[in-house]
Length: 150
Image 1: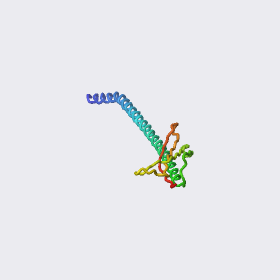
Image 2: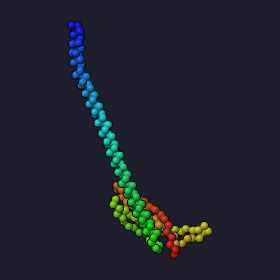
Image 3: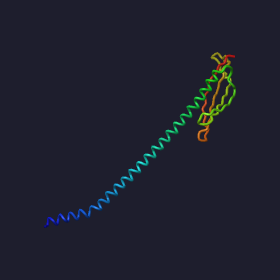
Image 4: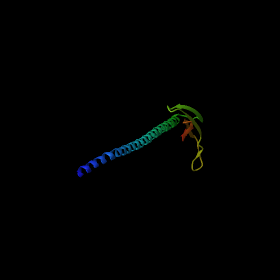
């Protein structure tokens, strides 16, 4: 009978402790879930920000490439055109990213040889592209020489 009493007391002890232990385990599981969701949300936000930065960088690179291509094309036109380049010229080019103002200036290069003889027919051409990016004016320029026998 004593054995039965101890088994019964263990059983009642087991039943009285179990609900509080269960509550603690569920509370801990809920805490873990909330912590996991928080870490997941922070990770997703960081990933979203990274993707946004990549898209912005890709757009800026494409815009810069387009402007460099405009400058290279205009330089090829000037070099292929017979006669002296225009001393000053402005034009606007629509790139799909907005308008680019292309400014051309040409001046005699005033180059001399080693013995001091001036080289005639050589012009220094400066091409400058200006455009707006987010309300801020951006610019890119190149300089090159054009020789025309005169």
